[in-house]
Image (cartoon, rainbow, N blue to C red; front, side, top):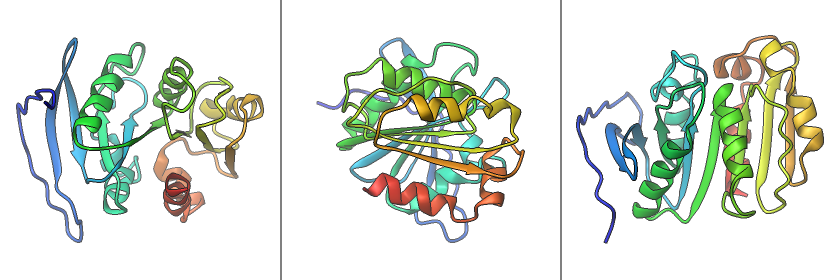
Length: 211
């Protein structure tokens, strides 16, 4: 039986040209409800983690997030963006999102985080057995954690002159293959700044996820 999940507020936001509706919902986790946006469908789920406090589940569906959540959903992925504190914790939100994805039929799980969300993605990945996650995507992440998993693909994308992401080259060097680094020449921190420097960044992310 699928686990029960509670929809406290469903707002279906249809956007021009979008193949999927954007559903705002509360996912019932073990420790209580988790605020999320769910969009898309498919066997591969991408759990999207916003950055520091002041951001929430909407980040990857707005301008500064490059609308990456919507773009991945329209590319055939199940996207689950959660709200977490942006400072500490975050594991319970990821656990709830993964359980929801499994209940929806996903057989592959990937994490995608921006800034502090990238750090959270790395910390969570390091806490799991190798092979639990298909891909860990860090966008302008704020940590230098090396990822030692050999069964998980890793992407580090950042602007060279972004001070928040200054530790990403070290994180890449300390990580084991399979790994990919996209070091851009700008200074912007937002996902939209990365896409501005590399307009085909979304294509690169989709290609990696599909490998």
